[in-house]
Structures are given as C-alpha cells and as structure tokens.
Length: 314
Image (cartoon, rainbow, N blue to C red; front, top):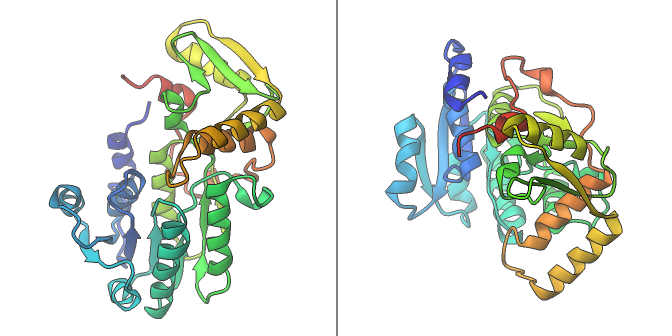
C-alpha cells in the first residue's frame, strides 16, 4: 500500500521556476487539506481560504504545512475577490447542500472572475453526473446546477470526476461487510464500478490545478472493479472467504431509497442514508461510468486499489 508519505517522495524533486499561487476553498475539510498538502509538495504557493472565526486548531496544520491561511467572509464577494488576486487557479473543496455548493460556490466563482483568475476547479469529485438524468441524485443535481453557472462565465473550468472514494469501502459504504464476510450488491455482479482514494483524488487535483491546459472534465479511477472484483479484493486483503449477496434488482434498491427517504428524510444532512443509496443506485446502473480515464495524464501518480485500502491497518 502506498501511503501519503510515500507519495511525498514522488514530488520532492519537482520544482518550478515559475511558482504559481493556488487558492483552495474548503481547506479545513479532509479532501481540501489533502489538496493543499499535494500542492505544496509540487512547489505551489497556496492560499487556504477559511471562514472568518475558524479556530486555530483547524488552521494550524495548514499554516504549519506552509499554506497562507486567509480568513474570509464567504458572503462577501469583494473580500473574496481580494483574497483571489494573483491566483493561477481557484480550487473549491467546499462541501454542503445548496447554500454551499450553489450559493457560496457561486460567490467564490464571481470573486475569481472579478480577480481575473484564469482557471476554476469546482467541488465535484464524484461519478459522472453529466450522464445522469436530473432528479436521480440530489447532491449531484446541485453540482450540475452550479456547473451550468460556471460554464456561462469567462473562466476556464475543469471538473475532476473520480467515482466513489475507495476509502468508504473500509466501513462506511455497505458493500463489503467484513463481519459476515459478504459483498452486497444490487443488479449485475459484472457491472464495472469506479473507485479512487481521497488521497489519489487530491494528488490528481493538485496536479490539474498547476496544469494550465486541462480540459473541461478529467476522469480518474484508482481501480475499476465489479462486485465480483470487490469479492476477490476482499479475499486477497483479508485471507478470508467472502460470499456475494445479491439483494435484488435495481428496482428493489430504488424502492428501498424511497422508503428510507420517507421515513428518515434528514433534508438538512449532506449525506443521509438515502443519499448514499442513491449514489450506489447510480453506480450500479452503469450510466455514470467514467470513460475515458485520464489516469495517465500525470504519470508520477501511482494509484491505490481496493485491496490496498482493505489492507490498511485498522
């Protein structure tokens, strides 16, 4: 398994005479912090934007890593524009619902345009929602809405699409159950699914932020695995025998989503149980499968697979 420390060795010799300034919003989150980490490893000057009043225990690690922490009011476009001045790219790793993904991100985008920032990476980091019909996933619909706004403004945009975070297979995603030794799925056991670790996603995003000529979408997958492949990876990682359990077809999962959403709506939660189930339904249906993959764009990145994640020390 490749750790973050091992990744550091890949980038330590990479320096640039032309140091770029990258602004990262949402840097106190796990993904945002990792993006800052890899940007600094690549020699970037990083300005991490955090909400005014954010405690020192949340910003200390960013400062210690070498980032300049800017406490800003995310409701104040002129203030955000001033913070974005001189940046080569604004990277958003903001997480939330409409008030964040659409509203706050739109103000950040407006500020980036006012500041003359040439490039913007939105907070997507997900399956390919461009191939999904509206209404099939609440959180992805918010990203679609924001990106519609992004495409109307004079800034070069690049979305990083990475599938499900592989890290979730170690416990949070109800696919690999290590207790009863089951791999649970709906639909087709041969359906290819995209997985990328959060660390690899951050490393790739950092490289893309420093790349002046990225396309509108970049698609990556640390591993493409079917439910059958997940079973094999679990067996290889643990040495135990796992069994495939098909709960039913995709219609059964859709019905389960409807019931769960009715009984436990949790409308103000970013990731309620039914939202994760929607994501699984999308993946298992095959429509948001990432293609073609851009894994080879930055060959210095070495990808972690499902077995690597499941083999991590508990």
